[in-house]
Image (cartoon, rainbow, N blue to C red; front, side, top):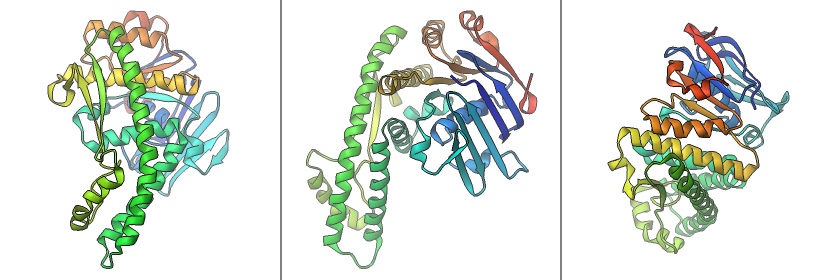
Length: 347
């Protein structure tokens, strides 16, 4: 459980400290007051990444040289962001490897940005897979890093003037070694999500939701790469592999990106994050903290009631809202409600 959050020069906040030692924390306030930024800070301290931007420099409050976010849970976690990069700390000890930083604070976050899992590009879905599997399995992160390194070398060779086909074949075989590791772990992860989605959709009384992995290669992976070699030579890039794979989310056996309504898309993403929460609990033995950004918008009463039951049963949940009237009374009575005022001030 997160007990304390401290932000310095972070987004709209010059200096903010929140006491959050409660199983349910509601951040209430008008738009652009910094509610989502607080969730972003928690997410950063969990994953070292922002759910909103790739370039962290924009997080620094205008006119300052650095930003700091600090979380006190069972460990003290700190990130310092500057124009030179980021520095990571656990219990005041600087951490040099991201793999040693992630996993110290498990969180699952839903935000409107997650709608890109259905409406967005293939790259959005691959980033979701890479991040979530890496957080649970450091061997995946290691294999993914190695794969990207070999892929770059293969693409550089394809772009070069002196093409060595024998060396290209060596790189292809090396790439496949890492691909097989990553592919198996992705499939295992998706199967786990599908397992939990079956139960979640029944409890929430919503449509059936299923994820299907779309690979770019056949069972004989080497043969698949060889069949695309002429295309690779012509386009000067590697056209198949886990860097080109995707997944499709189905609702009642229909492609959600085509057939799901706006409300259904939102519900699918919430159910997906709840499935992820259950899997993390199974994999780590510890229930992750749930971060829900503007979650009750566009949900009908039945789905709000179902989501309420998941929130009540969780270890700790943070919810942002523009009005506490959106929050069910069943949750409000035991919640720590923090009002975030204009320009990142707390009341």
